Image (cartoon, rainbow, N blue to C red):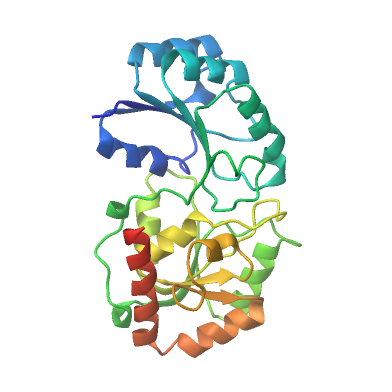
Length: 283
């Protein structure tokens, strides 16, 4: 049994990471943005809990523990692991390097699947950790009502690649949309929504659009048994095989062609969805 403590923001975006740790033993979730931003109070709370491991889920902006406070946790209380969901995004790079030189963490893990970050050679690059138990039993594709779904954020509006792509496909009635909610307890229904889709559209650009990532939606779409439609050039091809495990599109026109070609082929989408799910569960 491992006793873990997770330091996170109050966002519902991160609870799936801490929930996954519960299967290894006792877990305490401590939102660091609700402690009145006191490093000493945070240190005392964690010391009292006496964890075997500390997981820090970082954010680039806003209130965060100081680098020295994180280094103290790592050296005096328990090995501390930093989980970073946007390590390939350039605004993160200076902070990740600063953490490294201060020995703030025993390990830093980039969970956006991209090795384009300054510490890729010495630290760990992985995919988003998702608990397969979050998904309900899968329906066969012949019974799935949504041909192609997009579940997530709509992008930042005019000029955003994500907004442009979604708008173009919505105009042609080619995708069904489920916008991500900030409310708690919505992650399970998001996972369930994906199990209603034969195809799941992903847009691999990071928030700043300066790089591409393997989004959590890639893993979630695979666990839901969907055919993943992925942006061409995404680092997803470092982990899975295009044309075998998933399909790539270069632009809205290619995405449209794929959706139209497969919309009446549930046996074809079933086979590829099964392949991605099998590979995810195996690896």
